[in-house]
Amino acid sequence: MEILKKLAQLAETGRTAIVYGDKTLSYRELNSWSDAFAAYLKREAPEGKAPVLIYGHKELEIPACMFGSLKSGRGYVPVDVTYPPERVAQIAAEAKPCVIVDLTDTLELPGLNLSQLREILARTCAPASEEDWLRPDETAYILFTSGSTGKPKGVQITAKNLAAFHAGVRPFFDGMQPDGAFLNEISYSFDVSVCALYEALGRGMTLWTADRTALENPKLLFEILQKANLTDWVSTPSLAELCVQSDRFCGALMPQLRQMLFCGEVLTKKLTQELMARFPDVPIVNAYGPTETTVLVTGARMTEQMLQADAPLPIGYAFSNCEARICGAEGTVLPEGEAGELCLLGQTVSPGYLGRPDLNARAFFEDGGRRGYRTGDLCRMEGGLIYYLGRLDNQIKLNGFRVELEDVENNLVKVSNIARAAVLAEMQDGKAVALSAYVMLEKPDGEGSLQRARRIKKELGELVPSYMVPRRIIAVDSFPLNTNGKIDKKQLRALRAT
Image (cartoon, rainbow, N blue to C red; front, top):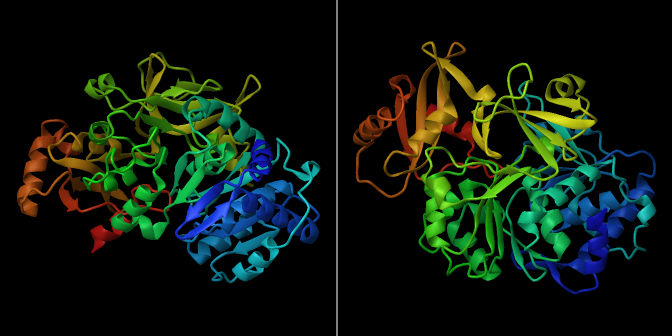
């Protein structure tokens, strides 16, 4: 694998690979630790290809375990500490790992604890032989996502998938320099972290880590940003929404910033306009990609023309090695401009879900020798630009009317003084009976909750039919984020119940 060769080369440079608080990890240490972990796996689990399950958050040892697994010819399963023990046990039962690494020392599962792991990593070992490294068609990592049945499903990504992602995303990342600094805030259990692990580290950059504590403490986060002097930013829009609440979040804080790339959620026009004003010389890129197609498969730089158009911001053009199709119910390709399901084909498409042939048959397909994936996302395409319109499975029936929740959200942010919005369906006896909207204001309005709700409903009523106007409007100071950095609608539901 290319990343493993790069690590060996970078080990001779003396550069810093990762900064985490007052601790640093050099490329030499990262390469040595990964060799030591590979040697341990080869000695203790010499047979088969079962993956390594790694439970932790942002510890410096995690990337060493990941790359050590690859050097031993095995994949890895990263699981964040936000996953409850019961969920971790479910994932372990599905993945059947050869080793469980518990960096928290809290799991009631057999495996390595932190002190045992550190003892292993400290050993001096010969470099892992390339003959033992992971092969192109073998699984590099498995990420477990939510399943509709309540059971997590594991998305398998191969070394070949990662190589295809690297080739496709190159136009956006080729400007990253070895002396650059990259924000490392995305959970390793979320596939966008691949941008830091494989793209930034693969170019010799330094990852500046912001953990959960920093993301919940703006003062601490801004201290990290100031020290890092970032050159490249990749995050969900939600993180930027939190940052722009402070006037400090501007070009003066990150004068070397080369690009900001957003993915994982809808990028709003209001946020984009704010970022363009604060970072006038920094390109703002909107990108998109399901976990099943390896991180990102579309992207485009946002322009003033896109901001002025009567449409949501596009999620970009398909990468050169990916074909995007807009398909109807029967799988037929629709004419340009018509809305349908986005289907993606190419070498970035996963071989499928681990041990789930039933799901694989519904979600994946073959066409002309190429692997394809049905995203479940409603999109349209014009001139090659793809526009995301919502989830096909996020449509509800309300009083006989079909309502896309994203449609309501997209119109709410057009209302004056609303920076971001999230809409939930109120359910009763399994049926949607009303909508509730949670809104984050651009600035304090001095209004009472009833007065604010009336004003928002009046303005929204000028944009959408009356049946799409939420019954309840709740203002929040910020949105709770899940481990992937997206708005956590489960927590919003809990807030609604209080």
